[in-house]
Structure formats: C-alpha cells, structure tokens
Image 1 (cartoon, rainbow, N blue to C red):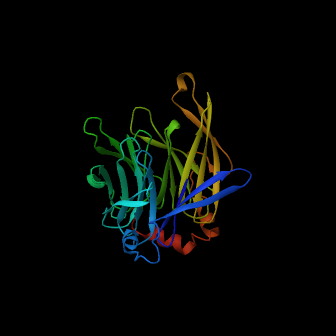
Image 2: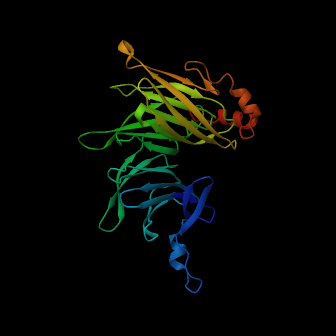
Image 3: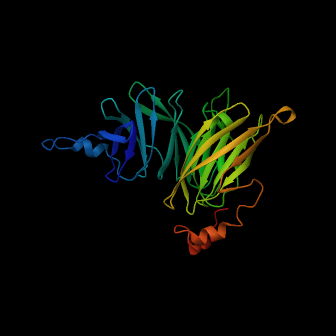
Length: 320
C-alpha cells in the first residue's frame, strides 16, 4: 500500500504489484468523494485547509494520521475511509509526526518550536495532550523515534538535533542534550536501529551520521556525506547485518532534484576494540574529522538552489 498527498488537499491510497513492471492502481481518495447529487458538505469539512505536510500509519488499528500547515491533525480509518478525529494540535504549522507502534502514542512537531505527545482515547476516538516538549527555541522541522520509543530526536531550524529519553518510572521524556554540526536547518531524520545510528539531513546540503555511545548520552558524528547541491529534504536507511562487517543503505532526496543512494560499510571492533566501529563509504563522503566546509563554497556556487546571495543572507541571520 502506498499513500500520497496532493495539491487538492486529498490523500490517495494505491495498491502496487512488483513484477517485470511496477504497476499501480488507485484504491480510494480521502476524504472519499460524494455523489454529485448529494451536497458534499461533510467531504469539504473533512478536508485539510492547507498543505498536508506529513503522514503516519498506525498498524494495530489501521489508522492513517495526516498533519497540515493548517495546524490540525486528522485520523482516518482506512477500512471505511472515514475521518474519525480532527483536532487543533499546534499554534503554527505542523511539520512532522511519528507514532509509537507499541502503544499508539502520537508525536507531532511544529514551527511553534514544540513537540507534543498525544494519546488516543479509544471510547470516542479523540486524542488528549499528555506532554509538551519545549527545550528548543526555533521551529521543529522533523521528529523521529528509535525502535523502542526510548529515545526521541527532533531536528530544528537552528541546525541542532535535540534528543530526549523516556524515563522508566514516569514514562515522561526528559531532554538529554543536542547534536551540533549542521550549519543550517535540519529538515529530516532517520534511524538505523540495529547499528544505533541516527541520520540527519540538512539545508546545508549534507547528511550526517551520528552514533550514540554505549551506556551514555553523548553522540559523535562518525560520517558526513556530501554530494547534494541543495537542501536534503528526506532520508531513509536500511540495514544489512553480517558477523563482523555490516552495511546499510542511505537514501536521500534533495531540493536539487536528485535522489541518491549511499552504501556505508561498518566494521565492528574485536577484542579490546569491540565497542568501536569503523565506517567505509563510497564516493561523495568526507572522512570523519575533516572539515566539511572547505568545499561548501564550491557547492553553493554550483547549486541551482543555494545561490551565493542566498547563502550570504542565511549566514547573516541570527540563528545561532
């Protein structure tokens, strides 16, 4: 199943089959279209009133969540294509959402500089706010959970990634620190869970890979991937595990109108170095420890998105 959002403020559901050719078939639209003879009053009230910025699917109950720049979040039941709940979530654009598949908790991130946690009330399909996370002072563009929902990461317009840990007794999220390294806004995040790695894509055209230290809260940037000429807007990672050598693929999409696939090999340490890892990656990477900014001037000059005047204006802004 594939879900897409469109300029008409609708979501379309597709089935696809993989054979010699990739075939798609549209199943339905949300909200479903009314008959011409019936006034589509309910249909128009269910529509978002501005751009749909993100979607998330809760497997256990077959619910699709959509969030919008109209500041609302909607929950759709795919079995009968109904909007079962719609609520005002933030004071500004809702930019990202993610779900804890274990308990259905919903996490939303907004330009109002907050991340909010919502719990669904099953008796009436409504959602109640359980916690507001507000450590950052700039708009939050993206949010992601690790597989156990023990760590929450949020990427902000000031170039930082904040991370929060769920306390075992209270189950509340406590701010534990931030990752610094990006020059401009962090636009997307992904987690390579088996390797305990976090990936961040930025407006500065780079992808950074961070590793959380065992038994602590410090993160180190182990790889910087350079190659895009425009802001990195979306990320995904898939892991392939072996005994000593592991590898994972990083997929990155950019506003420079390119889509790149990176292969990163991870060699795990042995003996006294068993907690260490070495990463090897293909063309387009920068060795850890090297300055990634030496070549950025050339990238900006060549970029159809990041013109020199845009970069100069951005650097003069008081984001730091």
